[in-house]
Length: 199
Image 1 (cartoon, rainbow, N blue to C red):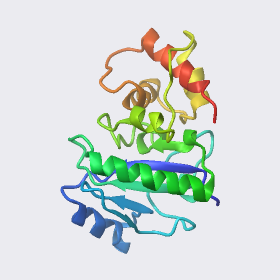
Image 2: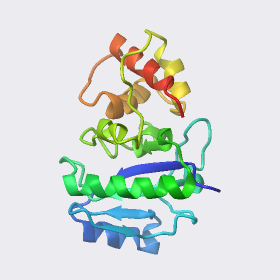
Image 3: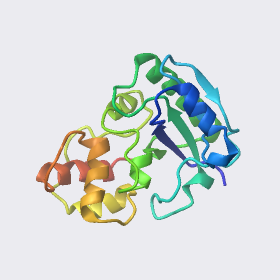
Image 4: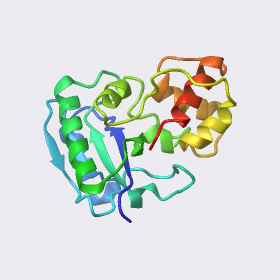
């Protein structure tokens, strides 16, 4: 299918060489279109017109088989540290190129944790989604919205059906990193604002 989503991941491995080896090993049955190392080097591993095995089980906006309709970008990061400035700059360049080639809207840039609620957490709470939004490469609310039911907002954003606590955790990973505990009015207002963003 024509790509309509871009899924961001972290490699979760000790180094980029090991991640590349795994992504290129047929036995591992995992792959991605792009790999960006911590120094800002980018390598295309799979042609963007072909299916890569990066998303796994999950769904977004009511549709599953995300692998068949998305481009996967792996960021060299074990998951316990911030993403480097050179890496983020390269990611921005790669995203602009994908946007130009496939006309994917900025709302189509999602986290692995968004589509695989309760199963994946990458690219994790250290990834700077607001920075991408300020560059016009993702979405971020300018101000809180209404105190609307959280489940309805998460449905409208695109999160798949799952346990309520798991969906809240996935939403917070992206839009309220560091937030813990029970659902709050802040969660509801931010989710409503995200749900109302264009694209």
